[in-house]
Image (tube, rainbow, N blue to C red; front, side, top):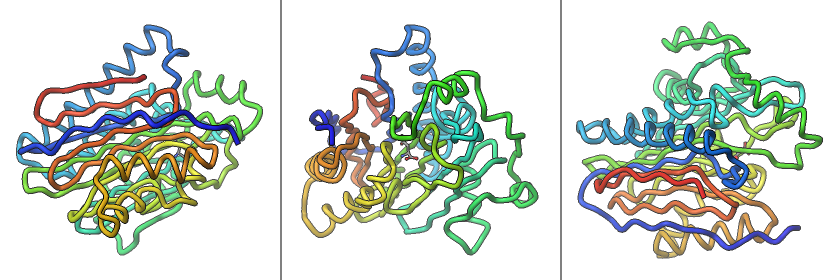
Length: 308
Ligand code: ASP
């Protein structure tokens, strides 16, 4: 097991109004990005923060805000979700996504290939079915839900093809994910997460992203969380739910809960990753133990984005 570096953590105290935070994955090493790549990612992060913030400023719900932010990130080739998703060992894209609202409603899709915006398919599962998680939803069903359906080629970019060629094993853990958490004017919270998984994964592999309590969680009494990192560890640690449990039962403050959870359940087990979290009071934490994490937030004091 490789020892992981200490957690880098940004903590924004509770504010009066709404708050949104986003991530574009903890699988990035800022030193490896060209200035053009960094600029493109920064622009997409800003657009995603602005999209979520605009919903909240108009009095919209936290759920609408996180979906608006995640759609922007899915549409950008810079991140591993939607277009530009990481490819399986067979060169195919299998998308996972999950949404959860603080009143404990949730929807998710796994191994999806068809929805332009997997986060909207997850939302449709929540709002238009009696289920929580659906695997490989058929194109006809996606259309019935009113979603835009794309061809399998849509997701595949030249950069991801090259990445797959240069990857000899899943265990190189070339990963990424996008996500958003928000608190709206009424103090409700929501989380959304979307990913293509890890480069060279086996077809059919399911990571933490679509699993409630692992990569995504929201509870109006405690916290909304969206995770990114080596998914198997986040599943085994039920990481998103762990943050909730520490707040609810352990009486911990948010920053301590996040730092200790990443240290104990991810870093100490030899993995890297990060997460973003917002409480119903509007407190925000963004944290990771990897070389970088694409991220951004706007808690009412203006948009901020960062990579390293
Ligand atoms: N957690 C994602 C997965 O394992 C990858 C990532 O977030 O980087 O599928």
